[in-house]
Length: 172
Image 1 (cartoon, rainbow, N blue to C red):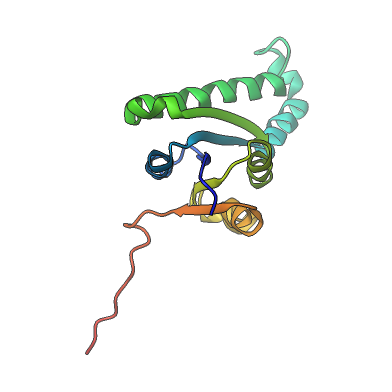
Image 2 (image 1 turned 60 degrees about the horizontal axis):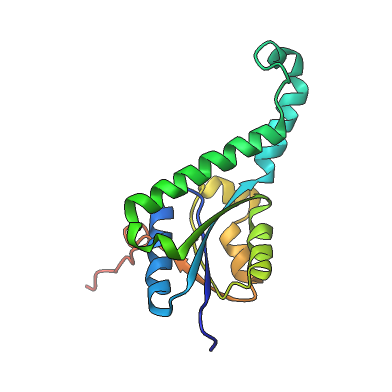
């Protein structure tokens, strides 16, 4: 087993993000690993903004002189998400912030995660297996499931015990 030097903590800014970061920090402390906090702006959302902008460009032109610009949208979302992740670090991991960096990418989430594993030479991925919700999973497939199946490195699945508690049958 090789030493863990870089951990990719995949967060979607859902209720599971804090738990994901707690696991990543605990794992990093034991190995002095760096943590890349990673978020992906889904290409599906970007395409939706682009479509809305093209269909309603005349309507939006009265509000926005240049219409809806996808590049500006992505820039704003990256800034907003980076800010939320910085706040999460400041509020919960102030002492560990030197071991963390933040990255926001755009694209298909599982593909971006797999690409980041390769480009950043990641040794371990930490992610929750429940984020956006079951409807999204049914329609589009689970990002976590796809990462589990295709990741060249180990993936730690973070779970909320209160949601995934085992139900014991009463013996009669």
